[in-house]
Length: 189
Image 1 (tube, rainbow, N blue to C red):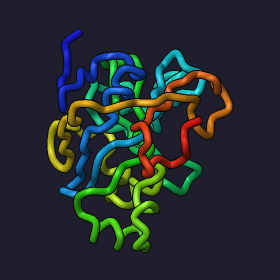
Image 2 (image 1 turned 45 degrees about the horizontal axis):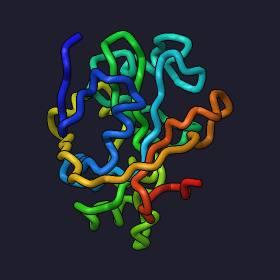
Image 3 (image 1 turned 135 degrees about the vertical axis):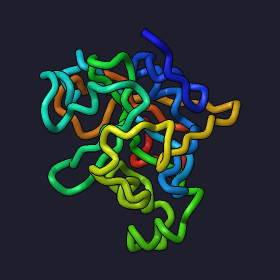
């Protein structure tokens, strides 16, 4: 298995390692984005994962090469952005749950219809709307436009806890966040 390194992270690694390492990374979509402050890991052997039952028309990108986007619609309403990891065919990814909005605030405010900066990217559906993420980005490489990833600064303290909004594997501590960040979707306990 060959390594796919972006922003100093090996995306061929297990999802829970990639999810932790993504905290503090800056992600931009067409020049709009911010610092990742909250993620969740999912794996093909994880009953809470979309990939648990194998490839489908909806989740095929999750089984694709690492360092690509997996975009799906949650509850038929909100787009959600995941970064695929592990080897092609495995079915693992990291849900990007929240960002600290940094770049392209005017576009985010217009897309979200709010001037409250906390409401711009404090949840997976909100951040996709703010960044203009749609199904059109499903399967796209994170190493090419419209995506841009920049490494996290040093000295990042990461906290972890159970994932949000799932009914299986609820105690698996694969939700990661930037310690003390006010930008996460829900506080860590």
